[in-house]
Length: 437
Image (cartoon, rainbow, N blue to C red; front, side, top):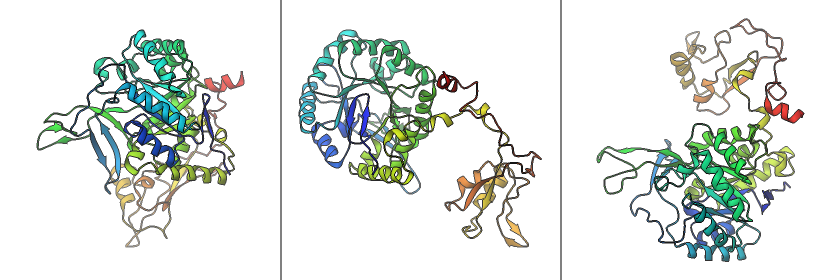
């Protein structure tokens, strides 16, 4: 049976599934329930400095994007860091860690960008027995206007400076949480590494307004007639998160830097994709808020069953396995050719593939043959774009089939050539050079 035990920068947990810093980890009651359900670790909701707690809005805090079946695709929140007293949080963290010594407990922290503020809070967190700290440089609303959160995370020099302070004043592993609200995610990751961080976690939420109330003409969620930009998360952000994780994993300047993957993870398959792209573990929030803490049981069993089926004995067998296959566009094989094929037995003759191809693509699909409704791909027109696969409502009804080496493409007259510049060994690939050295 696959071994799901996780060792992330020396922080051990029985599985790689952690709850991210968010409402589900705001108090001992929640965290105890999460651990009973099977979560391997939690990142406690972000702590602030000693003094009066922050004040959250008491009206709506969430805006949502739904699919056609009312399935939650994205969640926007305008909630701030914990509004509970610092010492109440610290006492609860200490007790939870004593009750669950085998689970990972990480303290998320956000204090002003001043050395003394970080120096003051770190020993208080250390005394709880927490396994590590996560520096919240990601929050895009409320706290950023106060010079914290993404206001720090968008300035690499600030990131490096604060990480250095934390490494100086604590024995605990330091995880630096990065904001996606930046042009090039590699720059803050490089800064965090330069400061001595033990790992990075990403992505935090994305700046967003999810909708507008057209009766009141205010963004949702609306609080007393006004709305604000918030942080976007959930399944809809997963593609953005995967790309940013991969960018850091394959960047020569951050190659080997441990990554905790966050962003839209809802199933075991989502988690496996993050691991394959270089994440050492994953953090989950929206899925738990949507389906409850027991969703982790499906994630654990699903990942374990898949690993058993594929012959992967432990997490190290899959972590980073897809990174060498992430290529820059210029190194893709332009002599690789694939064509769409429609399974006539599975086809329900809805015509969506035909309309998409006829109106917006390459007019490569028939809709009538010998006077009868019939959908078939014409190889001499098909460019292999796979739009038809994407819009077809029947899974596996349309598939992409690669032409064998040496065959002739009717559309271009090209011969399929298997001998192409493989990105994993290409001399222009800095990771290949590094591996060779």
